[in-house]
Length: 587
Ligand code: SAT
Ligand code: MN
Image (cartoon, rainbow, N blue to C red; front, top):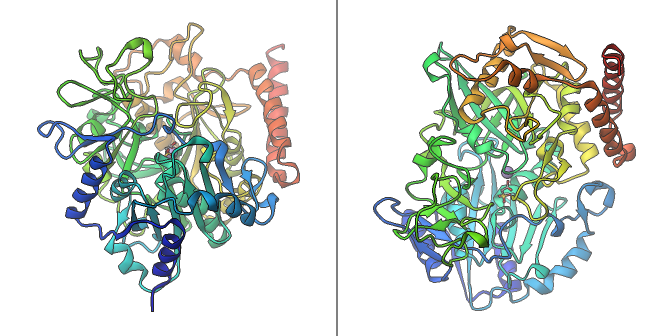
């Protein structure tokens, strides 16, 4: 008797008609073979063996370089269950429309069967998925990003508790591209893209879109959050999880080399993108990183911004859409001050600056997490790590102070629900436009976001020790457009203040929007920052915030009756406080 997984794979093969089917075991030899298949595909090359052993460069189709949110759908029976922020199609309609694109899509190709685990293999919180794909690049990448192969089959046995994902590159024509999620049957179909979150189905499709649905059914949380441990001079480690929209520095924050290392503050990486969080018997929330690798943004990464990852990605790394130096090393904007002579650009052409950057702005590295010098000794702890703080952050040139603390769980949920950020190259579309991105989950919540806010509020009630909630903005600029805060390793100064708050210290100044540190409460030892810039960083302008509140209310209107009343009350409360402040400042 075939297992439920074997049965599903047979059906997928009957639909897509591959020439051959390869079940992946997850061995090292097999990983080498997948990389060779990738090289034979023609859009990949081996990098310099000496300086980058076992590293590859892959060039995706130039029309396929980022997640495509317009063609990403949540397919539920009722439209209301997908909510106002998701694209929706009824499941049957979606399948009828997309099935013809999958019929025979793997003719003449190999179908790789990738059984995988999201989460530490021994963890009770880990879950099994299976992806079938006709892309060797996807297969090799899934081998880095997940625990793939025999280990997943052994965990699953004959159970039907797995999330199937059918992926085909199709013809890569953007008009034939669909990323479909069927949360009611926990199924994923993806066709027409071989890139990132569109194609590595364990990541955004399973761990977040299907994951949020499962989490609500089962009483846990799936969030777009990095997980880090901050060690203090006494050797005690406090864990924090932080949500930022894609390409806003999650990987760099999670892997930071602390500017306060001499004082004994050190950052340990548990995860850089996704957190699965479960309430523990002690009333704390415990986080595991479902992934096994980092799929990080390359441009801007260098010895200063992320030395840990620079060290990590000198071996066993797949680079996607970066530039190439004449001696076969990867290169991207920001890696070195000056671009080397004789660069090849991400499309494989001699680089001409007038044609744009050498590396695509959303070019990436895919590297095993264990290779980072900052990897936490507890990153695969089956029980997870207890979370003391949630941090929300976006990219805001104006308005948002460097950091503030929410005054209650409800206020914290409000600050997450109203998160806004200037868009980046991680998704197709205009860059630098302000958009609301609640909890950095706008593209990743698999159900009605109004219900998701309610679920957050409910979790707070359920936890005896909910994490404190903070909001940060590393990206505030002065009137000349210069960043006010140096960021990167210096961000530890803000984390240290949070640590003080968690332990009951840390001076604050109460503002209408929350608790901002007093300038003296931040450890600025050894940092050259003017008093004026510091004040500008921490400023909460009541008039600007009143305008922001109008935008928030308009946004909330989108959710109608699905928006929990508590969030309206929070908005009203902040509105009243702003009014007082406006009166006080005479506006
Ligand atoms: O393309 S991914 O979704 O994997 C990366 C990101 O946008 O966060
Ligand atoms: Mn992400």
